[in-house]
Amino acid sequence: MVLDLNVSIRDRSNIPIIDLEGEIDVYTYPKLSDSLKLIFEKYPDTKDLIINLGNVRYIDSTGLGVIANGANQIARLSSGVISIINATPQIRKIFDVSGLMSTNFALYDNEDTAMSRIQPQG
Amino acid sequence: MVLDLNVSIRDRSNIPIIDLEGEIDVYTYPKLSDSLKLIFEKYPDTKDLIINLGNVRYIDSTGLGVIANGANQIARLSSGVISIINATPQIRKIFDVSGLMSTNFALYDNEDTAMSRIQPQG
Amino acid sequence: MTQSIQITLTIPSLSDYVGVARLTASGIASRMKFTHEDIEDIKIAVSEACTNAVQYAYGDSLGDITLVFTILESALEVRVKDQGKGFESSVPIDSQAALNDPDKIGLGLGIVFMRSLMDHVEYISTPESGTNVLLVKNLTSRTDIN
Amino acid sequence: MTQSIQITLTIPSLSDYVGVARLTASGIASRMKFTHEDIEDIKIAVSEACTNAVQYAYGDSLGDITLVFTILESALEVRVKDQGKGFESSVPIDSQAALNDPDKIGLGLGIVFMRSLMDHVEYISTPESGTNVLLVKNLTSRTDIN
Ligand SMILES: Nc1ncnc2c1ncn2[C@@H]1O[C@H](COP(=O)(O)OP(=O)(O)O)[C@@H](O)[C@H]1O
Ligand SMILES: Nc1ncnc2c1ncn2[C@@H]1O[C@H](COP(=O)(O)OP(=O)(O)O)[C@@H](O)[C@H]1O
Image 1: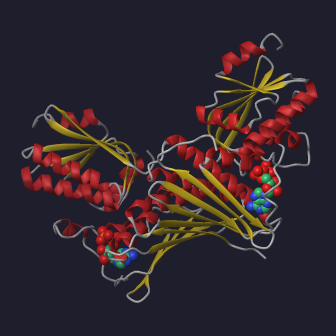
Image 2 (image 1 turned 60 degrees about the vertical axis):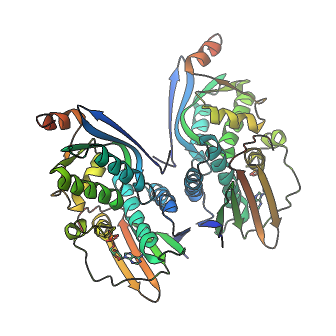
Image 3 (image 1 turned 90 degrees about the horizontal axis):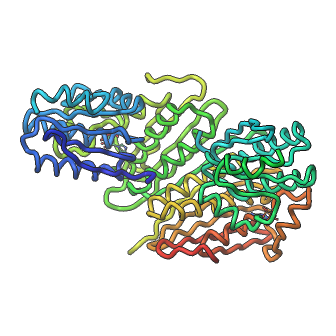
C-alpha cells in the first residue's frame, strides 16, 4: 500500500468521519474529494465533519487544497466546520505553513477531543 | 532508517546473538561482516551463533553471501553452525532460492526454539 | 579530481509517477543522513515541483519531467525540469482568493511550500524552454523559515 | 497512438545508491499494483543487477548505471545497463565451490536470484559495450520457477 490512499467513511452520533490511510498527493486526492462529495450529498445539513489523518504518512498542497475546499463547502452549505484529528507533527507543520488555518477547519489531537467539542451541536 | 542496517550484539547463556534491523545489501553488508569478525574473535570456540532477522526488511545475495561465509567460518573454527531466527516468509524464500540450505546454517522460527535446540551443547 | 555525485530520474508528466519521484528523493535524502523531518520537507518540495509540471507544463499532452539530484558535501540540490509551456513566475497567487474561485485547481500553495520547506528555491520559467526549479536543502543547518 | 510509459534512473556505480534504485523500482511496482511478494522479487532482482554493475563493471573507477523501467499493460520490464568491462555471460558459477574460495567476493547467486525471481531475464554483455540486463516481471501470472 505504498504510494496509495485508502478512504473509509463511518458515522459517530451522526457526525460523518473519514478515515484516511496512506498518502494524499496529486495522484490519490480524487479519492478524498469523491468521498467529500458523497458526504455532502448524504449529510447536506451536517455542521461537522471529521477527517482522521492518523494513518496518513504524507500530505502536500494538493491534499490540503482538497480539505480547504471541503471546509469552504461545509461553511457555505451549513455554516459547518471540518475537524482534523490525529495529525502527526509533520502534517501539523504543513497546515501551519499553508497559512490556511484561518479557514473553516480545526485541528484536534484525537477523535474523543473533537467529539467533545462538537457534541453540544450534534 | 530506510536503506540502512543497525547491528547489535548480545549474549544469551554464552551464545552470541546478532540482532539486525533494516536492509542488508551491497552498501550495508560490511556492518554485518564486521560484527561476525568481532564475534569470531571474542568467541573463538563457540559452536553456535544466532542471527536474528526479525527486523530485517530486505536481504539479497550480498547479505546471504556474508551469512554463508560466516557459517563456513564457524564450521572451520569449531565445527559450529549459524542459526537464523525470525526470518520472514520472503526472506525464507530467498534462502530457499539460494540453494545454500545444505551449508552450515539452520533456520528456526524464533529465539526460544533455536535456544532449546542449542541448549544441550551450550 | 572530485566529481560531484548526480542521480537523474526521468518520469512522464502523469500524476501516477509523482510518488515515484518522491520515493527516489527520500531514498537519496536518507542516504545523505538528513533528519526525518528534513526528509519529509524534501519529499514535499520535490512533489510540489513535479505536481506543477504534471498539472501545468504540457496541457493535455504528455511530456517528460527530469529530476537531477546533486549530492554535495553539505547540501542536496534537486533540479526539476520540464520542457512545457512555462509561466510568468513573478505573479504571486492569493491562496484565500483562489479558495473562493471554484475554477481554480490549486491555491498557489505549491511554491509557498517549496520556499517554506527548503533552504533555497529558484524558479526559472520561460514560455520557450519550459520550467526549471532548483530546490536546495542544507545538511547541517536546518531552517524552517525561509 | 499509444506510447509505452518509461521511467529512467541514472545512478553512479557506488554501492551507496543501489538502495535508491531499489526504492524507485518498488515505487513503480507498487503503482502497477504488483503483489507485495512480487514487489519484493523485483526489488531483489533490480538490486542484484545494480550490485553487479557496482562490483564488476568499472573496476576502481566510477561510471553510470542506467535503469530503464518500461511499464507495459501486463508486465514491468527493467533494463539495467552499464558501459563497463562486460564479461562472458555463458560461464555459470558454482556457488558451493565459490564459498570455499576465500578470494571470491560473490557466490554467483546474483544471476541465480534474478532468474529465479523474475519471469524473464536476458543478459547481453560484451567487453566493448558493457552489460545490459533485461528483467521482466509479469503482472497477472506469477511464477517462482523459471
Ligand atoms: N512547471 C510549470 N509549468 C507551467 N506553469 C507552472 C509550473 N509551475 C507552476 N506554474 C504556474 O505557477 C502557478 C503557481 O503554482 P503553485 O504555487 O504550485 O500553485 P497552484 O499549483 O496551487 O496554482 C500555477 O498556478 C501555474 O500557473
Ligand atoms: N555488470 C557486470 N559487469 C561485469 N561483469 C559482470 C556483471 N554482472 C555480472 N558479471 C560477472 O558475472 C559473474 C556472476 O555474477 P553473479 O551471478 O551476480 O554472482 P557474484 O556477483 O556473486 O559473482 C560475476 O562474478 C561477474 O564476473
